[in-house]
Image (tube, rainbow, N blue to C red; front, top):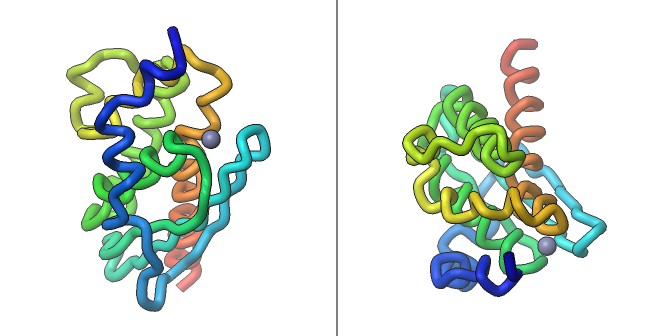
Length: 149
Ligand SMILES: [Zn+2]
């Protein structure tokens, strides 16, 4: 598979769209993610209220795939409760690992399903998963904090 085949219109569109690329007001947590193999740098900002991700956005720089993937994630997971957001992160990571290939199961990932073929491109896997891994870490920290209270 050729790299340029991955750069679908949808990926380019999400890469350009800045709706999800911004700072949010008083985030509950800000988590940094770095992918040294490509140079992608992403800060994921999350606001959680009453167990629900009420806002989610990112800043940073990197290749089109890392940016588009993180933008798709922000759009998909905003307004979900934490557990649901974590479940969908896991589903996305399973898709990229190639563990879940059933299109029907992957449907709920919405735009992010376009990244499915990244699983066949090992050099791009870390670009596609950077934002999702970073968010997973942030959500784990938030859940740990909630349990302490
Ligand atoms: Zn990258």
